Amino acid sequence: MANDPISQFNIKELIPLEIGATNISFTNSSLFMVATVVVTSAFFMWATSRRGMIPTRAQSFAETTYEFVANMLRDAAGSDGMRFFPLVFSLFLFILVINMFGMFPYFFTVTSHIIITVALALLVFFTVIAYGLYKNGLGFFKLFVPSGVPGFVLPLVVLIEIISFFSRPISHSVRLFANMLAGHITLKVFAGFIVSMGSIGAVGVVGAILPFLMTIGLTALEFLVAFLQAYVFTLLTCMYLNDALHAGDH
Amino acid sequence: MTDKNSNTKAASGKDLDQRLAEMNKRLGRDVQNEEKKANSASDRNGFGNAFKLSSEFISAILVGAILGYGIDWLVGTKPWAMILFLLLGFVAGVLNVLRASGELSGGYDLKASQQNDPEDKT
Picture 1: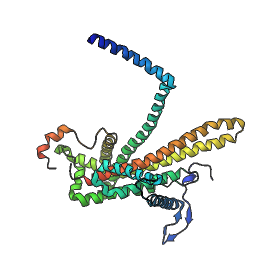
Picture 2: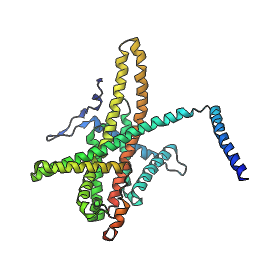
Picture 3: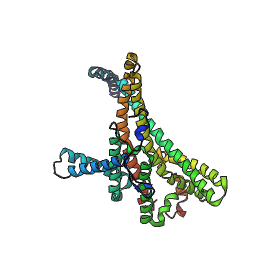
Picture 4: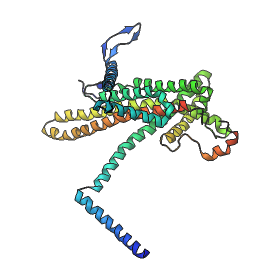
């Protein structure tokens, strides 16, 4: 294992595949995405297989997760937002489990690649546009025309609202990606200090206690960030879906 | 009657502080340290907040610049649309930040909407 903090993000081709000139190899990134989907679905199938009035531990965990996401969606987008529940729930679990997988040593963190987070953010973005146009028709564009703005500044305000709208997928994706990337680099850098200080000698070994404590603290913080970023991503998704649902009625 | 009441109140207020301090001591609670811990938690929260707000701000500027550049490329008015949209991007960034920090929750200022109400067809 290389000692620099960036090499953990290298993509390795596990099963090289090529169709025409396009490289569609099965990489370590794909492996962890598949693992995430398999583990998540397997857990929920297992947890809900023996449904009882008195839930088992697994069933109660599954129900709590369901309630957590359902309440988030209901609060942000109202009860007719529940039609997007499958999307929102899948997004939340996918990101959460990927982030948690990334916390295992030697595991690959899929969300530390911006292409993944951009793809997820654009999925939400286009869902909002497509459903907003389908449900509200041209009324969807009222999203860009806030009510109660005097006529002479309206063109400016509309332009600003449009820019603000298009900036959403960027901030949506960059936030998740940068948090995961920065967190994992910091963790690796501090863990690297332990090794390089320990190789100096007795003084170094004693001094290495400091970065070791720091690494422990950072690991706990990273778990918090891994959960929080999945939560924030889902919450923003709910808020954007709210715009698609209620664009017409200002 | 009232005098006596307020007197006892004041006395009990003084008493309460003393008793609270005594109880904390008995329970071995370190109030000052707890406050410090809460502060460090809010620092971490502040870092997340700073990250959130800056990404909102920068993304709007980027989108403004890209939109402006695209329009320039299409219409052939080299720097002008980009300059205009970059500035609009800054404005949109400020709007994003205000929305993200909850200063402005989507709605616009009440006075303006009341003035325009008759024309408002929404």
